[in-house]
Amino acid sequence: MGVDFIRNKRLPHNKAWSRQFYGRSVDLFAGAGGNTKQVFRASTAQGHVLCPGDDVLVRKTADGGVIVSKDISQVAAVANPSRNLLQALEILEGVMPGRVYQCLDEVGITDIEYEV
Figure (tube, rainbow, N blue to C red):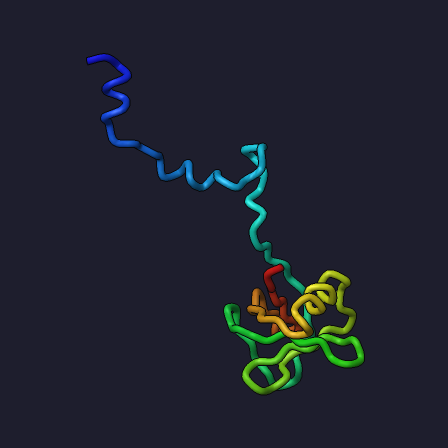
């Protein structure tokens, strides 16, 4: 009964955490490369109240603007959308889901997060 015999007869043992590192880069400390969340600021429309965690729909308009709608009503608009936001909308054909990150009702501003 040598060491080779024992190694051949035992059941294979793989650590659960080791599967997480397959497909990653050579550098162990590199990021996972998954989806990242970004936040943009929109002006809330009069009479609409948004709460953190509300699901919204972000849409690009024909004139190049960006609006935010909840259910069937427009609740916010972006005055000067960033290039990153416009590129994300172009990739997703002008419509993408978002979530209310923070509301500043006193000044009429809402922060919306989306995944890239």
